[in-house]
Length: 437
Image 1: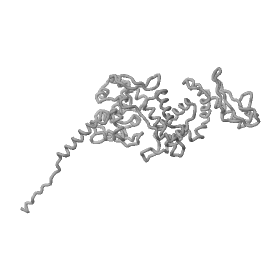
Image 2: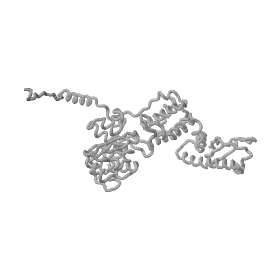
Image 3: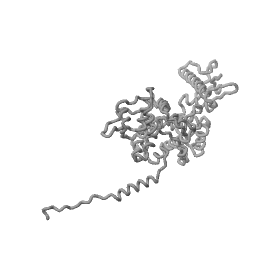
């Protein structure tokens, strides 16, 4: 059974360090300095804690009790996750318990990540005159910080900004992909985060390793990307499917609206009837995208979508519940073609490549891709990009896993060029006035 014991470093007649010993099992224990000091005269041999004879000693006694509880709580959780319990672990838990590290060393990587999180509401958005990071971006930094803290436990050291060189990135990438089994895209995003944090620290004149500027991000090859979308025919099948469950009927409405408006799920699920306005040709959807802050207007002309908007608008639902019901609706509608794709493995909690019935791979993030894929080559690409919020055609084409069709572009040029060649400007013809004859 695990136990926590405190002891003094020596019995000298002066303030000495208080050490903590964590006994995990037989012949297995670790010890570290707590960071607190006390005069041995104020120490109780009976309790192995400070005497409670002064206000200062009572405060110190409570701090040690707090640490004892904190260590037990974290020990149980980390043992269940097979985390290595060693001196490095103990030192980190002591610092975490009293929030020490974050306030001391600005050169630590985790500290600057925390600095970005703490100042998120005043940070300037790149390419915009506005300030304030989005809620999702803040969550991304929090996730990144926890990832770095986990990696520090593996390498048994605090990571300084000066440590982040090409060799570090290579080892960190190997850990992300080969040990943690994260996807190539996810690992690439974390390297992006790493570079962003380091360059941000440099702006505040905090020393960083010059090699960080040579680090390049990465993503999976286009041929390795598996994108599940719903075609117009499949959407029609879903529209006509017989559904009895109220939650399924509501989810179907979100599917149909989502695949016709081309917005991210975070934006789609925030839409209310107030976002729509009538037009003689149909209905306009006005929205400000949360990620890009772009003002988007989408025109809607399909009667069944207009009917849902005007007469039977779907009720609010969490993205987690929506993703669950989407799969169930698609299963009922027999969207069951077996396709290759990636699905979360229940055991590893990571995406696993395989062949699955299509309904198992459909989620809310498929709506925007379905919209872009269905209308590609039917609607001019710049118009689609304006609706989806993509800033570059190359990014848009990668998003829907399409390569630039140069032959089609050449055909379009020749078609338009021919129309210009055959076009004749109206000629003015002078008609003589009868009075001049």
